[in-house]
Length: 217
Length: 349
Image 1 (cartoon, rainbow over the protein chains, first blue to last red):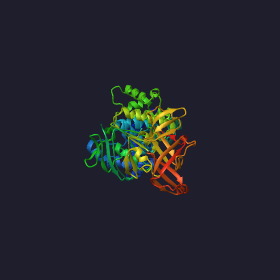
Image 2 (cartoon, chains in turn purple, orange):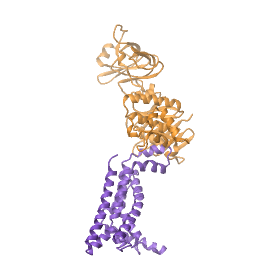
Image 3 (cartoon, rainbow over the protein chains, first blue to last red):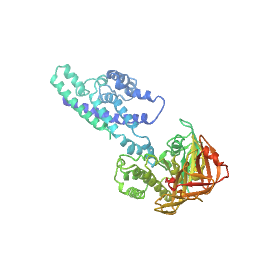
Image 4 (spheres, chains in turn orange, green):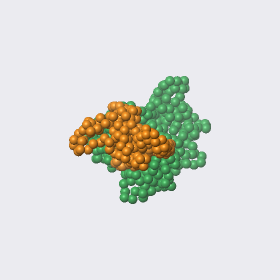
C-alpha cells in the first residue's frame, strides 16, 4: 500500500508541478508586466484555491469536471472520457491546489526584475521568445525555482480536493495523504506514522531548498 | 548618412509632444528632470507607444501612427545604453557583448568591441565585479556590437564619479568618430552637453523649447542657461605647461591652471559668475592672470544681485551686487575689463 501510494503521489506531483510551473510562470509574468483594469481581481481569483477550504475547491472541480459537470458532461458526450476517480483527476486536483503558490512566486520574481532588462535585450535584436528564455527567466530563476519547489510540496500533500474529485481508490487514486488518512482510520498506527515521517521528510527537504533559493544573490 | 527623425506625442500619464532630428554625430537632449527625456527615448525605442507621430531611421519608418506601422523593439535596430548600464547580471562581460553581436563569429566580435572600449581585460568578469565606469564601457560595447542604426544614451554617466565621467566622455567621442550613426545623448549636465554635443535639443515640460549649438544655447542669455550662475565655456587648448595653460574660447584667450592636455584638444571650463571683478578701466598690477576687455551687452537685475553679460567677444556672465552696479553706472554698451584669476576657471570636461 505504501509503495503504491508513494509512487502515485510522486507521479501526480510531478505531472501537476510540470503543468503548474509553466502556467503559473505565465500568469505571474503577465500580471507583473502588464497593467490592466481588474488586474488585482484576476490575481485574487487565481489565488483563491490557496485560501478556500480544499473540499470547496474539490467540489467546484466536481461541478465543473464531473460526469454531468459543465465541462465534464460535454467531454463525456464527445469522447466518452470521464475525469473523476482517475489519475488525471488526482493530477488536476493537485495542480489546481498548487497553482496559486507558483503564480504568486512567479509574480514576485518577475516584479523584482527590472523590466528594462527585457527592453535592453530587445534593443539588441532579441526576439520576445529569446528575451524570455535568455534574459527574463534566468533573472527570475531563483523565485521561479522556489515557486516550483513549493508547488511540488503542495501537490505532494494534497488531500481534500483530491478526495472530492478522485476519491480514495487504493492503487488507483489513493495518494500518500489519503493513505495516511485511511491507515489512521483503520487503526494501523505504524503505517500511518511511517507515512507521516515520509511526507515530513520530503517536505523538509523541499523547504530547505526553497530557503536556499530564496536567499538574496 | 542616416539621420534619426522622431515626432512623438502621447498623453498617457505624461504629456509629451516633441520632435527631434538627429544627424550622425551626437545630439544632446537636454533638460531638467521630469522634462520627458526618458519618455521620449522610450517612444523612439518602441518601449512606449505614442498616440501620434512618426519615427524613422534614414528612410526606414519604424513607427507611423497614421500608417499603422509599429515595429517591435527588436526589429527597430535602435540601441540604448541606460544610466545603470543594465548589463545582464547572469552573463559575463563577453557574453553580454556577444548577446546582440550580429556577425558569424560572435565571440571574436565581442572581443574586438571590448578592446575598442578599453575593457579587453574584463571579458570574463560578471557585472557585479565591475566598477560603474567599467560597466558603462561594456554597455557601450554591447550596444554597438549589435550594429544599431541609431544609439540612444539615457544619462549614461549620471551615476559615475568625476574622473570616470571624463574618461567615458572621451571614449564616447572616439566611438562617435568611428560610427556614422546618430547618437542621442540625454543629460542635464551643461559641461557634458558642451563637451559632447554636435547639436543640442532643449526639452522642457514635454516640449522642445529650443535647439541649436550647445555653445549657443548654454551661453549667457541662451535658452539653456536659464538663470544659472555658472559660465560654461568650450575652448581649445593653445598651450599647456606646469605653470598653467592657455585656452582659446573662440576669440577670447584665457589663462587657466595646468590642464594636462595636448595643444589643440577640446576642453570645457566652468567659471562662476561671482568670480570675475568688473573694472571700468584697464587695471594692471594685480595678481589676476586675466584682464579681459569687453562690452556690456545686457544688464539683468535680480534679487540683491545684478547679472551683467560682457562680450569679450565670448559672452561671460558676471554677477555683482546692486550697489556695485549703481556706483559703476553700468549701461549697455559700456566698455569694461574683467579681472579673473586663472584658478577661477575649472576644468569640467
